[in-house]
Image 1 (cartoon, each protein chain N blue to C red):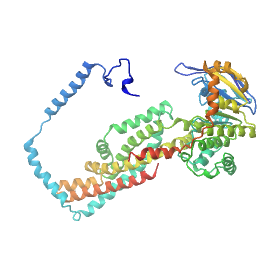
Image 2 (cartoon, rainbow over the protein chains, first blue to last red; image 1 turned 60 degrees about the vertical axis):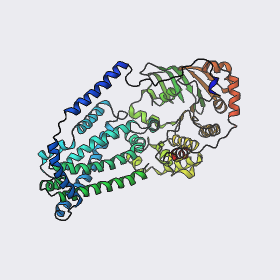
Image 3 (cartoon, chains in turn red, orange; image 1 turned 30 degrees about the vertical axis):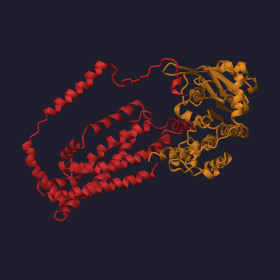
Image 4 (cartoon, each protein chain N blue to C red; image 1 turned 90 degrees about the vertical axis):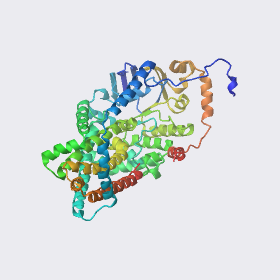
Length: 272
Length: 279
């Protein structure tokens, strides 16, 4: 068939219809407005160039410390901090996941009745609304300085993360498999165990490992506001202008995060 | 054995899937339920074990009124009704054995099913059923490692593991090639004969239905428009069920169809090959 076989007059040009905003003038208005706002916002940011220039020096000293890390003089503090951070991470991840599973199931529209659904979605929304640092400040105020506040913070944040993604995963399971299990006369718990769990397990494991990474990194951040762990060590050494020790801490954090990343990659590859 | 009286199903969208269906199926009878897409075949068999709640009408399993049961009583009734699904509906990540044993879920307490510690006679029966459907060697494989025909055999074994008194079968041969379709239909009908099991088979392939079942029910727009032996399903009856079409030509075409045989590679193999270029 050649192209010339077409005998009647068909249009020879075609344009993709606008997918998002149909009206042409509205499109100009919205996109133009956005651009003007962006330009105005960018010009309103004040930059103190002199201060930035002076800061270069400080930044350079920090970088030098990083390039010549001092692992020895604060080694005991670093080890204590790391041990606290790892304990915090492991405990908060495990406890967080254990609490997330029932909440995630309750927040799945296809499994839970409406009241349960709204309560669980509410818990998730609260957990996601507050950034870790804000939660940490509150919990440090409640429970005092130290890793316990950090543990609670990370466990709380884990709930918002895992429960939400688990619920979404459950909502997308293949309904036919669940229907087949229901047809055997299975109870609700058996339905979860036989039809839902096998479908969501690989992703749940992947998400849990990912959350472990996040929790370790977060443990370094929330330590700065007093929740113990390696963050507290890092904060102390920066306060004392010991950038070489701070550099050592940062390098150790990077190494541990990379190891965790590599390990979780290995595990995820084996689960399908 | 199964009696349906004035069964109606109106979906929330206002679609009337069933408009007062009356049916009676005696013990041991294998019935083919045919009709165009959207005629309510699928709704009808799902209303029997209340996977879909009927809006009106009654379903009797023997003397038991299924439509009047509470949630927990319904679980007990569902054990007596085995179901085989379109596209198998196996739990893909579980082993073949777990899939077959899941037919026992209505009988065992949660801890047994959770630990996969099923009673010895249930396990024995599961092995016997796997042998009956020709899959003894595959018990420990994951369900998604099997071919389409093999998966449907697992589906059959799962339904039989329930020790059912009735089989509901929804498009058992959709997505199977013509030869495997005939093998699966033959297996289902043989098993029903062996055990004196009544069955309702939803099927869109008229010729396949005619060659295997002893009674055909034609559904159109939620109403029974044909009920009789397969021989009585002539051009007039087909037109009543499906509308105008050159029915003799359809029949001739179908007959030449199952002489073709294709070697179909397994789904997993295909996905692997498809993704090979992407890496």
